[in-house]
Image (tube, rainbow, N blue to C red; front, side):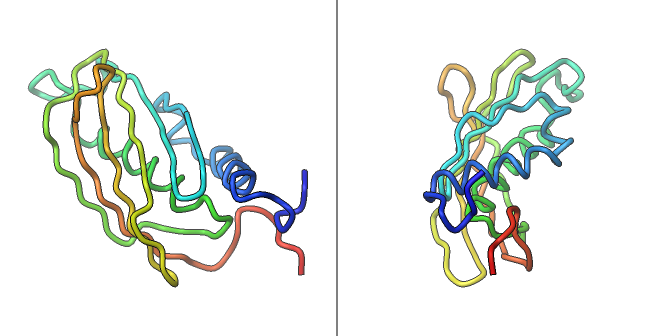
Amino acid sequence: MKPASQMTPRELAEASARAMWNDDSASQRLGMTLDNIAPGEATLSMTILEAMSNGHGNCHGGYIFTLADSAFAFACNSYNQLAVAQHCSITYLIPGRIGDRLTATAKEISRHGRSGIYDIRVTNQSGEHVAEFRGHSRLVKGTHLPVEE
């Protein structure tokens, strides 16, 4: 693998995502797939299983939040700098249904200093808008890939 300093921004985002994915058992065990990664962007998807249903027979909101949060994490960690969530909020628009394939698309809105803001749109397989998530990130010490001194 090329040294991080010689990678294009997209290569750096892809390598950072691979490093994160290897340790992300929550996203993996929920059956999420990482469909796209680029600097400040990420798309993840997941099929809603019966085990993810709530008392109304719909997808439990926590699973929708988790999918959006994972897309947020990959987007804000795409620069080979460790980033964590500082604040997140979600608005549910329509229910996710058992069997739906939900897709969370994260886009960077602002990145300045140690702070970032990301909007994540969750849609179903028909393109219907299921939820809107906003995440505020904070950079912490460390990198995903070794950095040459």
